Amino acid sequence: MKEGGMGVRDHLRDLYRKFPNWFTLARIAGSPLLIPLLMTRQELFLGTSFRNIDIAFVLCIVLGLTDLLDGLCARIFNQKTVIGAALDPVADKIFIWTTILAVGIPDDHFTWTIFVFAVDVSLLILGVAGLLIYLTEGPSPGMVGANIGGKGKFISLCMFAGSLVLIAAGITSVKVFGVELVNPGPYIHVAAVFAIGSIIGHFYSAFFNRKV
Image (cartoon, rainbow, N blue to C red; front, side, top):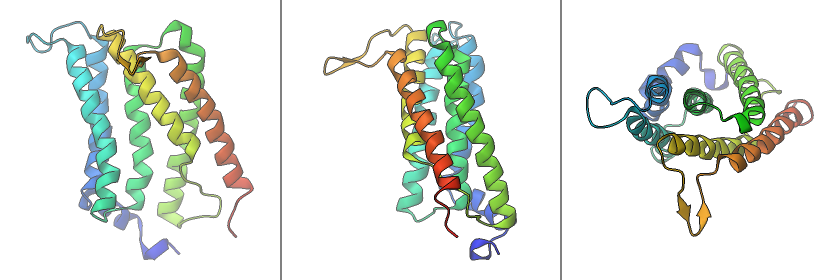
């Protein structure tokens, strides 16, 4: 029996009735807009004095804020939902990888970037499959949620994507307390380490830490 007696329609109603989910949906819907902006980054935006890369940079900030707002509002206003929690990492992956692939992967970071991309795609497929099982059959013992490796990977990828966008915008150096922040190399390497940790964590939780 489904948890709390909720069916698929109940979860779908939560999707649009609980307003924090609107931020998640906005992140999913807004991410594809980055593709034309980043691929034609040096062209002027609709005849204005702003380049497409400038608009893309602002859009990245706005979409990034939606990631903060959905979870924050869900906790503050007691609007947490199963479908919202499931769609949040999906929206994160769509946003991050749309940005990275549209701006272009640097040749010297290509291998590790593709490795992390493959991990994220695999986890996305498994996550969607798990969500469908949950919505139709209820929770199962082998289902697992996000782990610290996944969260660390996401933060590292945000820094990596941010560095690529800043470099594309012509901003090659941003220092805070003497530390260079525009440095994509270390971020993707750290993301790869977290990706491996995330896989191990999910594997362990699914097969060795089941609740019967």
